[in-house]
Amino acid sequence: MFHRKPLEERIADRMAQRKPLEEGKTFEHGPAKFVFISLLVAVVLMHVVGVAIVMAFS
Image 1 (cartoon, one colour):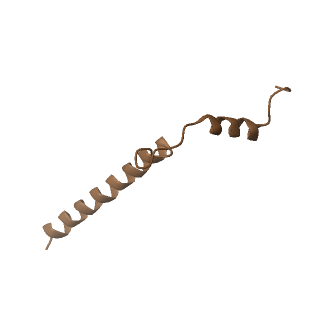
Image 2 (cartoon, rainbow, N blue to C red):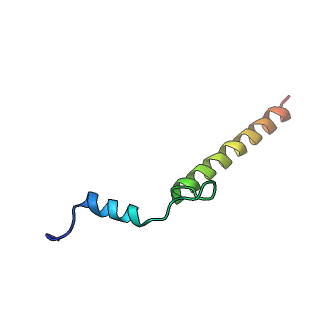
């Protein structure tokens, strides 16, 4: 514990070892991709249901 590098240096070393991201193939953060797609699907679904309800009562 006392002979370890500071956290910032360990993170920098880890980032330097990663390969560069491929354009158009890599979403930078996996869980962020899941949240983004989930919210997108939820918004589209709510719009479809809302339009269906409005059309049913008109």
